[in-house]
Length: 479
Image (cartoon, rainbow, N blue to C red; front, side):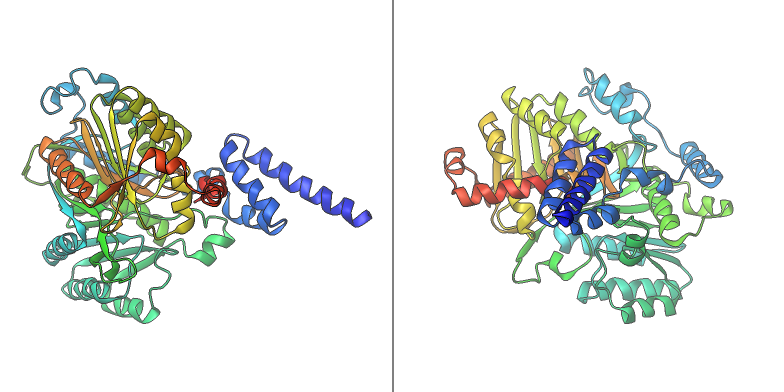
């Protein structure tokens, strides 16, 4: 009896600790309490090492260091900043002052007006474009991916980086320590031996000891000579070329950018480089890393970053703001659909208000647990009028949102709580009509190989299915 009392008191202490530390986030608290009930003590140990996200933010912020202030001043001197709604394209923003104000104040990356972009659909097109531009590098080459595989396409990237390093180009390369943990040491050694500077971002062992394992760098960035940049959903691996039979065709979206917005891809990379390597960029290098460029286009583009190094959850807030003002359409493609309560209500309200809300998700996911959690959010949204489509051709991994003709987004962030609140993410917000129409055409083409989820049939799925979805949803804030 004595030991039972001790065990009960220990369990109460663990539960009380979670409730005390997570009182601002009830959904997260419920998820951890569920884990604690399933695996007592072990669940609390995992919580101790994994769950300390926001409390660690100060350690990860770049803060007010002089070099980053100099970087910001350099960018703002050279970029054409759009700080007046009158300079937005066409007349689409005449009645969107609040949305413009929100976008202008979300982060340290403002809307810029001197850009040119190209939407890249699928791995084959994106890899060809990245390798072609990387081949042109004369001064520096910055590469950052969540997943980088040492397979056929990964070796092509490796060989190009090695060749450029031997030509005297400064090559800096970051991979997430967890996402790219399968990369072999022999593969890395070849890079080091050729002069490529390579670092893992928060390797799992170090991150676990330091209680930062929950911080994953999900960004995908390539910057060539500070003039051309890439961002989107595509990592480096043969699976993105449809070479994995169990996955099949891999549908994804990336974007190539030239112009002022590249400055903000560059500054994001350099901040991540400091966190991963501990090395600071020196002031004399700023002119080479942020070179003046001849304006080759007049597209408005904004680069939004979010993560533990930011004061705001900028990507989530941008999504919420854009969805809230939609009048005609909200089209979303996402591989993982686990919206936070605010976005969930915003989507439901938009659909009830008559906005055409369509969301493409995978038919077969690469994560059964996440897929079940995603399905748990569908029923009430379906009843509200949101239309869900399941991609049947293979696996859809694109992260795209289109709102009216106001804006479209292409980036690394999924429509889930992990992307919005935990990961380091990056999204390009595109305002040019041609870019929006291109993404709209891609979306409509994808619909042709999707099956729409029927509300009545979905409501009659088995009790086992509903039970599995319910349990998965309890864990959804952590997925």
